Length: 443
Ligand code: LLP
Image (cartoon, rainbow, N blue to C red):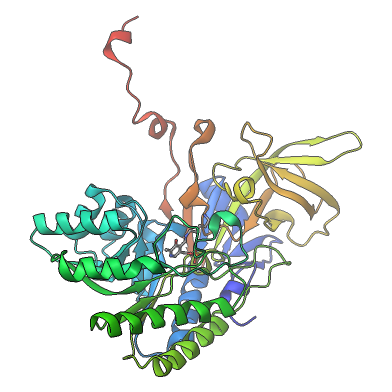
């Protein structure tokens, strides 16, 4: 293993003397006694080690800026950690902007992405001094110019382009191919630049942005993406005499959800990006641009696990054995949405031999609520604790209250200490926004 995204488990996961699984020096059985289940757990050491991997891997390029794609996990606690590691943030909504702002993040290191940002969201971004806005389409370009004008401000932007690169990942998480809802087609870039130079006086263009997809295992496409971005910078300079000095290559590096997954290391990706960038700088004769990257999954996924308590089970005669946990598709929609696969272990039987093949079912009222289709585990009993690995990314951030079930708590573990960073929702939280019309009252 070269870098942390290639690990299936958090780096501190181990069997302890009590025979239980521990993470961050915390016995997971004790953690469950204290905080209950389902419980999201984030290992601070793993998170900081991933950040160190990225910084080390990219340090060969002098003008590099790391950003974390908040859509993978956006909480104030994790934002504070990433900020302390020197990361900026890619945000996609007022909610994400507000979360990092309240966490005390330097807003000049924030980039606002998205294909349909609202007037309120763009206004908030300008008001709070978000460093860059990645403009996605002509409508937004004109809207942003109007909003910036009304505040007597200049909006600092990148243009999001669709590089036309297909990557082999789930169709729903591919974004760089030509028929995509995101970004300007390469044939539309000139018109956008002309509008900015001639009409949109409250917009300053700094560079180009692209993102090719997520959970990517192919390495060469990153080089191709860089070449397309640099070639465009050179072309824009030649045609308009406009020297842009920033490129943002997006995120996308994959992680290891099961033993079948072999994601490339951060070091491999960094070498491919930097080498190709240096080659292209010479080839297209441009000044060295600042390079931005914005990974999400590969930063936070491995650091996170989810703990569940095992409840009922059902042996289908001559069929599968279903074992149900107290969470499922509302706290982790990825298996039902994308057919995503996960690995798991029994916390309180961490050294026991796996003996039976079971299907881990969720508790939600839907047949499709299956967390793991087929996994070999030790003999299971009600009350056992299941630890599902690699749930740090796109689990809490995509969680819902389906079936009016409260969202789980999240705990940060490090050096045998645990701190709650998201409290468990209460029943009152669930009805907090409900209103019963007065005319139905007193009946
Ligand atoms: N930048 C942009 C513009 C993006 O759209 C994304 C992800 C990222 C960066 C971060 O990509 P990452 O490094 O995390 O792959 N919900 C899906 C993933 C959707 C990704 C959307 N965009 C999932 O659970 O697999």
